[in-house]
Image (cartoon, rainbow, N blue to C red):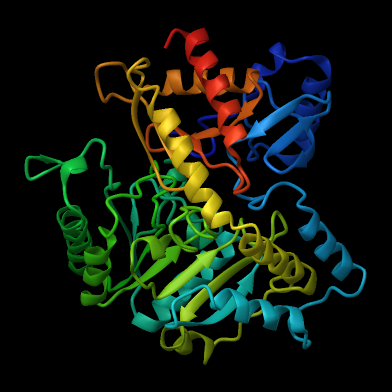
Amino acid sequence: MATRSTIMDTNSFRPEMAAALDPETRKLTEEREVLGPAYRLFYRNPVHLVKGRGSHLWDADGVEYLDVYNNVASVGHCHPRVVEALSRQASLLNTHTRYLHENILHYAEDILSTMPDEIDRIMFQCTGSEANDLAVRVAQTYTGGEGVIVTHEAYHGNSALTSKLSPALGTAQTLGLTMRMIPTPDTYRLTIDGKLAAECTAEEFGGWMANEVRKAVADMNRHGIKFAALLADSIFSSDGVYPDPVGYLKPVIDTVHELGGVWIADEVQPGFTRTGDAFWGFGRQGIVPDLVTSGKPMANGLPTSLMAARHEVLEPFAGSIPYFNTFGGNPVCMAAAQAVLDVMRDEDTMGNAKRVGAVFKQAVAGLMDAHPCIGDVRGAGLYIGCEIVKPGTKEPDQKAALDILETLRDNRILTSVCGRFGNILKLRPPLVFSESDVDWFMDGFTKTLATLGL
């Protein structure tokens, strides 16, 4: 039997749960049958949301919730400056990129100014899947290879190409024959040369991971596959949130280049000031990618994504193959994306992520002694992983994690889980999350643990 997807199925509603729902909610879940069985809803009792503002959401009954999950509304739900920008542009023009328009040019220049000078070309799409799909094609054209390395529980998209590079979708999803997986950089459980990974230096931990890349490329070579790229996000979000030690990715990327490949930095989750230490997640690690992709946080919910590149890496593909995305880079989405970028600067979302994220992480970690089900708390900025285990062990406890999620929902707090075992609370709120929001979460989390006897 196929295993379920850790990112899609772990915290999901299933039709057999419908009997416990109120009549109106049950009716809505039944009406979703027209969408087919591939879609997923969060929670055993799905939430019917109708309004959002900042880091707060309201359901159809007027009940207010705290959003501790959403990086789509990166600068907060319905930010007035973003709403105004997209509304103004929508009233003027919306078309594609085969006509001249200032919005795409101004935004391209502005977003590239946040990246290292080596990254000097950019193309726009609608989704992170499309951005990663294009980046892989660019990498393969540049290197002349096909082989792509990902981590054990990676998720990089749902196109035909990227789904085959996304083991987090579960074993029913076939993986690419030219893809190789390396282990999750699990600083909580790994032992390296008899030393706990959490005690390793960046050089030691990075050396271990670089060696895993070498082994993967050696296996490719044995099968006649030429190495093209490492595709990874710098916080290893779907694997379970592993941002430290700072600097450990440098020897990994040095090895990728030595072996003839390029690094595609998937910044959909760690980018756009999320970590609090740099605008981009890779900046926190002090390295420069060959290709950068992003999506969800760019335009606060409008379908917008990007692939940025070193010009020499992009040229073999772009100089010979035309690329056109009907909706990618359209004037309305570019107006919204520019407004998001302006808000990030003006409201210092990076500073807020660093400041409030530190308070948040410390508060959650402060519960560990009293609640031994919390095995580890790790993260950077407003991206925190809280690992739920069986007390006294490092054994993952998915059941307890899901019970926590459902009880948090009862306490009007929304989040989800990630990681290979579906036992890590994924605390990734909008970047406007405040210290009062931390207080709300901690009050609800403490009540939740007490209710469950954890």
